[in-house]
Length: 500
Image 1: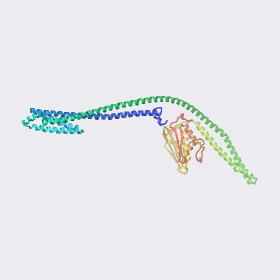
Image 2 (image 1 turned 90 degrees about the vertical axis):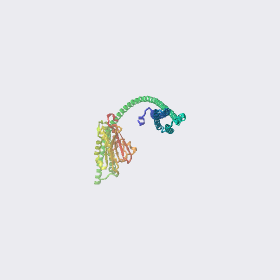
Image 3 (image 1 turned 90 degrees about the horizontal axis):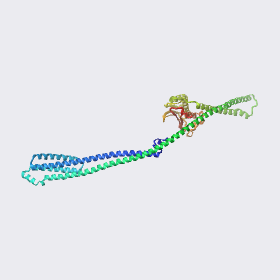
Image 4 (image 1 turned 45 degrees about the horizontal axis):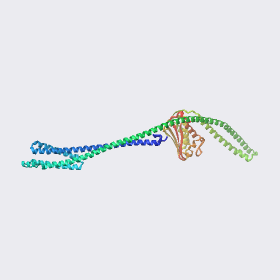
């Protein structure tokens, strides 16, 4: 199964993409809503602070105006009655007015227009206080004249000017308050709109996603039922095919055994009569030698050539062919016996096994000056004899087909990969032409220069054993670049894994 399908959410790629897009849009909407809510909340807090600030300024302005009116009232009462209590009230109101003015100056420090007005109020209050102190020193006649024209008194004019400035400040703050309240309302409406829009978007995405998932669940249910039927049919086919393969393998084994035995009888006869012919040839050759010594009449030259050259050559060819045929028959019998042998899985220390094989080949390793390295191999549960035959074949082949013009290096390594044991035998020898990568695993087939003994049986036998053990053997190689044979095996083989 390919990796893209492993994460599929629907029956097809289009449905999967739609579901992923819908989910992405939903999460994006939630993220946008959270971000917008955070930003709007900050804006709302800022607006609330501005509104509160404006209300504080307005309250401070009103407090100053109230103190200013009390101060003027106390001043008038003082001049009309001369009661010292009005003097105390005048001083208290003046102090409160100055305190309110300082507070107001701090509050409007960020507003240039209001700062200018606070400065104006400060100047008017100072002038008012100076005028009041002057009037306290008036004589009786001056006091009566001031009271007679009190409506035009300078102090009254200062108070009127203060009222004008205070009204201007209050009006500006009311304008600011209206603007900031409007901004606060707009922010609140924006917040509500974002929430409603996000909710609608999430609702739409959720409905669309649920519909897609519902449709895909229906498709998956149908696919599961189809897959179940297919698996049942496939299992039946596999069982039938396995039975056929087992019968075919048994027939092949019996055929190989019968053929080997049937071939061996005439082969033994041929080899026996070849020996008889060799004995007869030696007798005739002795007769010729005796005739030469005794001076008899020798046969003609053609007969002599046949006796001394043609006959020995023919007998040599026959003997070589029969010996080769005998080796092949023995190999077929061995394969037949191995195919019928019952496998016995056991815990194997592959590292110790490979090092034992390397030790048995030390004489050859030393003769060729080869460096044979055996690394740590993973432990497995499998048939000892079969695994030992496979590893022996691979290591012996690596040692057999090294190049004579460079020091040989053979590395035997292993690891666990995707739940299977992977053993590699790598060399820097002759290599195998890529066209022959599969050919070398065929029975009685070899590749490259035929200067080493062998019948082309080893790798075929090794791969057949690997198949029986639930494994595979592959090669990666190029000419003159060495070869790497990879043996893949289950970490724990069971009899049901046998590929017979």
